[in-house]
Image (cartoon, rainbow, N blue to C red; front, side, top):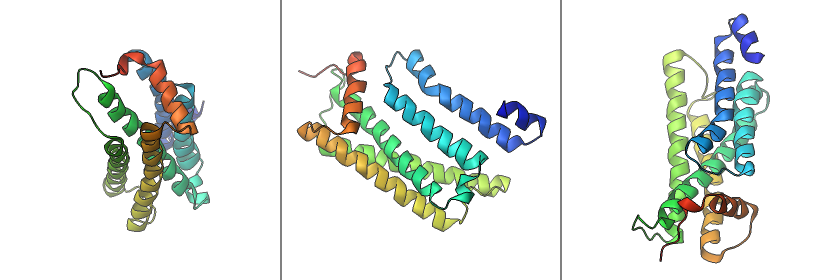
Amino acid sequence: MGLVLSIYEHRWLIAFLVAGILILTLLPTALGKRFAVYIPPEFELLAILFIFATLFLGEVRGYYIKFWWWDVLMHAGSGFLLGIMGFLLVYVLNQEEKIQLHMKPAFVALFSFVFAIAIGSMWEIFEYSMDSFFDLNMQKSGLVDTMWDLIVDAVGALFIAVLGYWYMKRGSEYFVEKWIAKFIEGNPRLFRKKR
């Protein structure tokens, strides 16, 4: 309904954002089915909540302007989610029999941290490009916004890197590790143990 209303009112940016929300909300399920990967409901729920919070509440409803802390919260969440994605990516490679990698827990944690920071940096480049070419205001306060976004991304990514390290090293049981274990158990073909 929001998409139709935005198009009718010629509010093209809002229409684009609402269409993006719809596509991104359905993307985890579609990718999971396409590549036969089990995505635990916790991951799907987190992704949907994050997309809803950033695009709909943040951009469409103006939370980035109404609440000074909204951008900080969203970047902490992105560091968190991207850290999990980076950890799972390299963890899958580390467990694959056909790939002769034997990465230590510290390297896997470092990779998940750097992966999240790299994606966060690419997002900041995207914001700068949109502001420069389309005269938008995605960066709000320019360099200050960019630096705080990267710092908060790093804090969220570091949190996941430390938890991932503990998971591999000690098998500790935090909620994130339980979610990771659920992903691994749901995708046994991706996680064939090396001999």
